[in-house]
Image 1 (tube, helix red, strand yellow):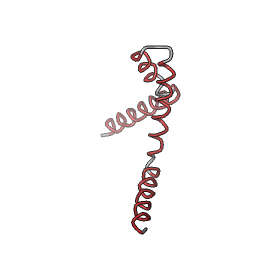
Image 2 (image 1 turned 90 degrees about the vertical axis):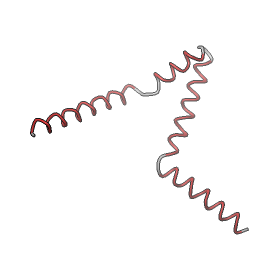
Image 3 (image 1 turned 135 degrees about the horizontal axis):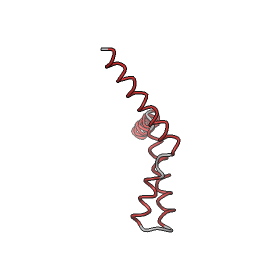
Image 4 (image 1 turned 120 degrees about the vertical axis):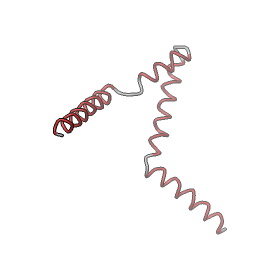
Length: 84
């Protein structure tokens, strides 16, 4: 009986650690991409469905935010080099 509880404790510990480091988002994202792919496969070939899924993977607002962030970081790096 103690063995069962020890195994259960190990499983719960692993699940807690995975959740703590954000592993649950990987699962959720995989489910979302699978659903998008399945929806696209109803109307397109496998290749086209993968292309549509890949293009829909990053929302436009997030892509714009990342672009702005990269530009700001490049400007900071350029300013730091100019000061030297």
